[in-house]
Image (cartoon, rainbow, N blue to C red):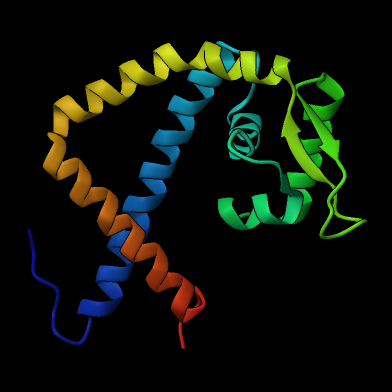
Length: 155
């Protein structure tokens, strides 16, 4: 492993981090597509539907949580509603911004993913160990928060 020169170190660290995160994102998306397929979903539909299992949320809130655009979440939410996997409910806080919630059929689809999801989680934990897995998650949270604070594009 070569050590970056002092004047290049920040740029090389950013590039290396970004490329690693892009690769990891691709790996997770590939695994997610495979898992979601078992329930007749795509990874994107699984993400959106999974976002509202605890409580109904507006499309904007889902988009913020996923770090994506409101328009892309709206398109997926409409598809989920069209499939009968989710429904729009009135939002007492905002009359025009409906809340998305899973239907029972949507919850059933998510439950079909659970066994394979658990196997993947167990395999990853066995590979990393609990402490390293926790540290990785904490590091990713800190990295995401830092990107939020600097606005993603830097000063």
